[in-house]
Image (cartoon, rainbow, N blue to C red):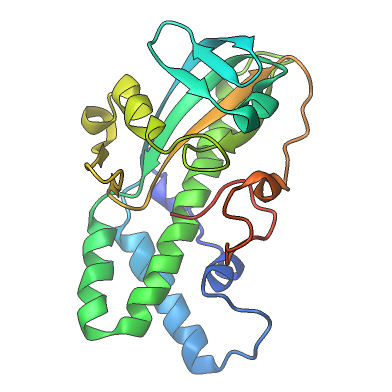
Length: 231
């Protein structure tokens, strides 16, 4: 993790409002002040960490992706479509750390409005962390003529959420960034992301309509054409 990593996490206010299900209503100055306070609280409490590794992939048949050098096999027609022009992929995990979880819980007992807003700020922050990691990969890891796909996470579309545990084990996530998964499949800290990103020699346009493939699209509150869902 870069020493100044927290400083470049802006926590976009429009994204925070989206997670708060804001749909163009007027916002009074008092609420604006609370949102700004919660953004600052979140920036102060998060401790972003991430880890990733690059693997060659073998797509034996449609919907079956073999991650070479591991025992991981991903069965997903949706992910196959994301990786169909790729010969490598990145397995990544990122987290905001446990302190922000403690603050959300603390405020839920005393100031519920702040707890809800801080939760939305943290969801925005973890997406920004993932975007920064992806930018770092593009700038420092890829060779000339290589391109990244959108991120794709287990539990999204038709890729089983249980694959999170296998990916985290491969990445040694508990030791590297303090991320674990409990018996119910919940990531701890909760504001964390595990994802797969493809590497291709073709200039792939990253999809902004990935939500259209998600099995939860009919009930999702946040369907806005983003690359990945909030956690």
